[in-house]
Amino acid sequence: MNNSTGEEFEDEDEYLRSMKQDDSYQFSYDYEYVADRFGDGDDDVKLENARLNVSLTWDDSSAPGYVVSYTVDSPTPIPNDWTGDADQVFNDLWLAVTADLSSLGIGSELHKDWPI
Image 1 (spheres, rainbow, N blue to C red):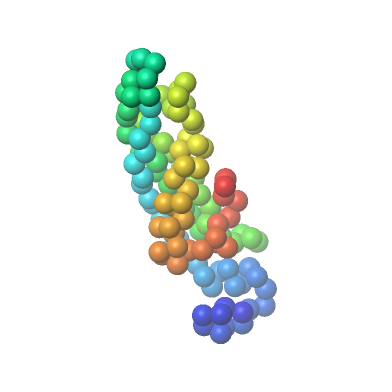
Image 2: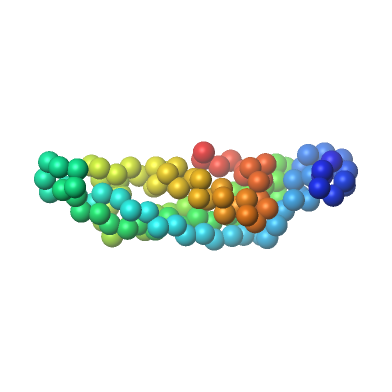
């Protein structure tokens, strides 16, 4: 049963389908990372800004929900000796992603096979 509408459903898949919003979403997030070190101190670093691009696409298969994909655009290679890979960037920004989704009414029950 959908507690906000009182609507009843035959199974959980139908319930999840009733919560679907748009077919797809695109989000971008800035991420500052260490691109290079030029000394021994904590401040002896060159910082760069990367952009995490997140796409959500509705999948209406037997376990309906949003499938996520993401890429990281950066001016220097990621990963490097000081910064993790694209999965780590996504992990670090997970709270921002879920906050944006929650503001759209997309709760965790609609996250299908997400990497986190």
